[in-house]
Image 1 (cartoon, rainbow, N blue to C red):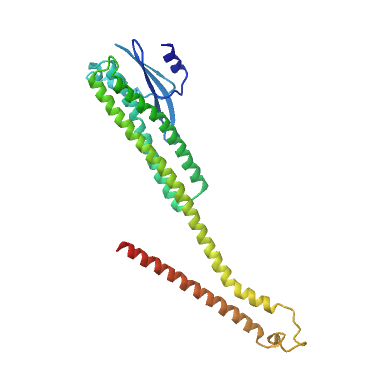
Image 2 (image 1 turned 45 degrees about the vertical axis):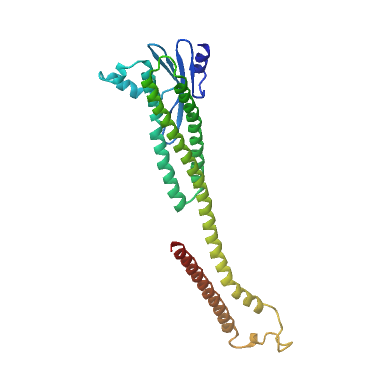
Length: 286
């Protein structure tokens, strides 16, 4: 049919199933790739005694089917074109599993890296994975509708046995779609983990800087007081310790004592907060 031929020439069509007078037409998307996912369109013409496939590029989802046909005892040689079209569709769907398995392993590695050494490069990898998963979802969701349409209409030439096998393909598509949704949610969770890790590290840095500032504040205050220009000859109250023999060691001792006292107070507060958190965890466990 001219409309079917137009769909063959113009790629990037949605997966669909069309029924014409003397044949049926089916569109799906093949997948390939590990680091970068690549999809291509494949079209199937299924007639009374033939199956014709039109593939967009070098990705060949029919290769496993051809290998099976080369075996003399293959079941495909004993079945009709409807069963052969099922075998091609099943081969297209099976190609999604290793790609999604690679996705799972990649997301696990990214999660470990985010917890150890978070960086903006990891964020870009998460975003890229999320976009690729969205592209897979766009390719698979219409495929589920197309398979449901075949099982619902039961086109001429498709036996009951083939429809049962296509029902299994439909179940696989649903399973893969659920897996894609799980990975997409995992990508969102990884972004939350990244933001939480960055926030935690920033809080730790701010805590260290606050402790350093608190320890350095008393010496700075004492140095600022004794750095004022008062004339000790004008009054006995104008810093008489400036003329004292041990005035400088006394000021240094005051700085050391004040800083040490604050340091002890800070460490005790940290230990107290740690013991409170530990007791809360024990209470939750109980």
